[in-house]
Image (cartoon, rainbow, N blue to C red; front, side, top):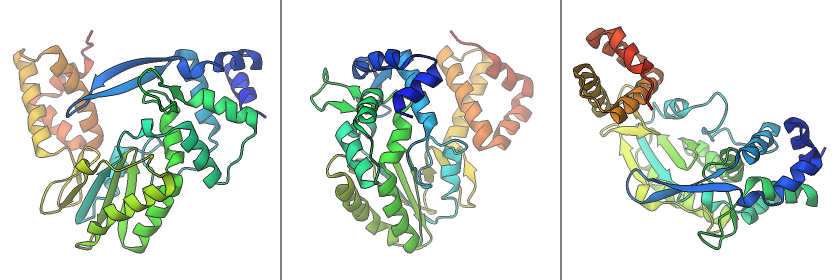
Length: 310
């Protein structure tokens, strides 16, 4: 069954309706900017509702291989699992891929398909290009790329990285290193002193061989750490005892916000942040939330979580 036929069946549309919609789909995105944590802006391209529906159907078909080292965007796996992976590593290396989603073009996608031995007829190729890629011609001349905002982009990015993940995972296994990738965040941990200093060169070499210059390392975010210093993996602190924690600074700030809430001085945006970080805390370090309830009362914590903003 063709991809169009699958989408039509799942969306309860005719193939003609789906095909007619997809012809101009790469232009059917709402584009806006959000500030990055450090500096600058991130461009978000959000597909319109119908395109988003079709993209979700595509992801559900699960056509592509994903390596076990890929920890993001997989059912039943979370950032907590990613951090737990590295809990016993005395030495840690974190690397970041630059402008990850937007670095993946339609031409790179077809190269990776070929490298993985996957072939599609012309009709399915046409369908996938229209369905999965955003035309950002208004902002630059690179043509069709994955967008930050499309529900299919995370899944597709994991496939794009499959051969890279396979090769890096094999190198790490042979050298006593634990490897995981959470989207554009690469994490390596080991018990062996000094061995991680070779990894950035290996990573850059494999990236160049697999992707040319399309996907590159953001060298400014390469960080080495050890048990002698704080180890953080995808926003979670690993203690010297190998336990997952929110970290002292974050706990202190949460307590500060709870006290402001009790005092009636917390701004709306602080309450919204507090709700989110308390949910995250329950997941990562539930005993901390329990201790907040003991200190400030469970009723106060429940009241914070029940507030509806906006």
